[in-house]
Image 1 (cartoon, rainbow over the protein chains, first blue to last red):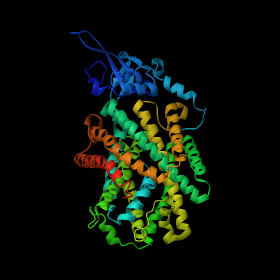
Image 2: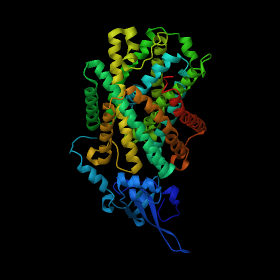
Image 3: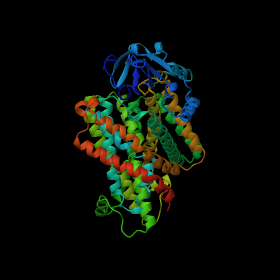
Length: 118
Length: 411
């Protein structure tokens, strides 16, 4: 599905996995930012990623807990960066360039360097 | 897939089928109610076959692991509730498994229980850190096959096969006082939960994605879930039937891991005991790793992190930190001194509460032709899926009251 076509935002985009151009998982569509004027066309402006994106979706006391555990950072991904939408939202750029990999970078600093894996 | 790979996959599923909760509940159910609960084991095995197959198929075709689906289908609020509940349930289960392994090690070596719990946890961390995913599965699954000694032990004690076959028929034992009937209902729900533990589906579907399953792996998926789980269930039934034959008449309630192992010692002596303990060590150890990774998979998928053991630890750092933290947290629970058997009982009740929320999104997606194309649920899968969904929902509603009324089956 192309981002320029007709979309069901709540059932078809929100809460989907985001994958960047290098096939790296870099978050979930936590909410969607719209723009428009009364009587005018409504357009998608950006995808919101991060616990701050829960603000309008959770009761206040839940949000207080989320803030306590995970903070309320939110990253805005311009809609123009969305390349396609299927069972995942695919981005045209690397997630790191859009500010999506900060959590992974912070966690990486806590790990010992290892040659293990795969 | 090569026949040898398929064969090893099925054997791995057999060896990995039984965990500490099944060991405990099968033996206690057999000791207390004879063969009358065998039908519940069969029914719940069909349930885990249905949902296991579905989760593998969804992973192979839609490339969607369970927690991605859950969030997308249930939404953020209900998804978060399920995530938190399943995280707690898996953590308690992981602690029960670590405690179970520590008890087996204590029996084998005579070393103190806390020390063995620490050693087991360190060994698990090293295993997950160093071994590739397939080898983690294979090592514990195949060495867990020592548990087959319980099947041989059942044959060796010449059980009444006709009565065992009678247990396959759904029944409510006649002539039992009300308190025993309530306990029977509790054990039925507990066995259903122990066989259909949600972590098994999280782990299985995430494993399918780790192994990069595609349409060509659907046959393997079907065989692993039917033959592998089916043979695993025979092992579970052997535990139940053997306990019914050996412990029931003597009035023994097998509440210790060592007592369960005695089932193999009766016909085969020390060798049987050793094989039983080794089988339990690896089967429970494998389950400890599965529950821990299931939690890391759940968090990774829910929040969209990079996840999986196909990545190097530094390539999926939040996932790596999570599974290390789950092992550490579970060890802390064990070191508080709570009995592993008690933890297993809590885990089983917590798990059944999560089951409907786990399986609903799976059912919805497996039936969605947009994602699943020609591999969407057919009429049989739909009837079985929704039938079992109704069953686990009823069991989930009944679980907590039954647990409280019977004091965890002690009534």
